[in-house]
Image (cartoon, rainbow, N blue to C red; front, top):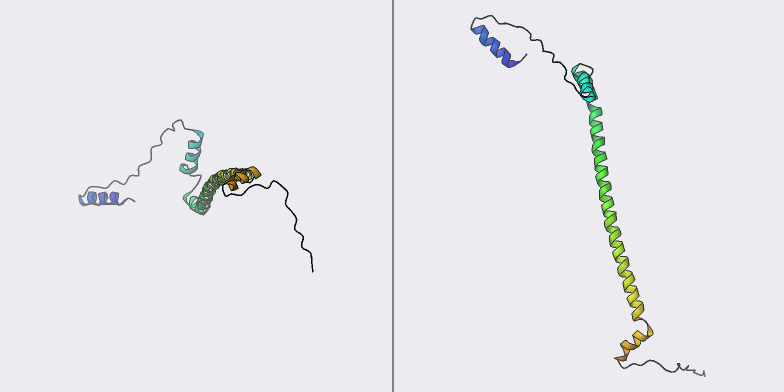
Length: 140
């Protein structure tokens, strides 16, 4: 019983008035037009299809389902993060590949004989016009 109701009953008893202990019957409301889901849950919980004990017994299972849901959400977040990392790294690899190819082409161009001749001309070296001579040393 409600403690405020008990207090009210005590005050009424002190005034020497008879205490009426009538149980008020809950008024049944006419069900409004509800969706099928709302009607299902109302029938399930309000009309007694699931008791408090059964709901308490289902609590570990519900906690397990909540944990599975959180793991599912965390897994999807990690997958999205991995996809973003893969995209970032693949862009970086493409940029490094382009840089490698451009540096390789530049090196190939600078290692041509005409380009090398132009660079060493400033040092006073000249390109050979005649073929090299072979030096033969006679043994003892």
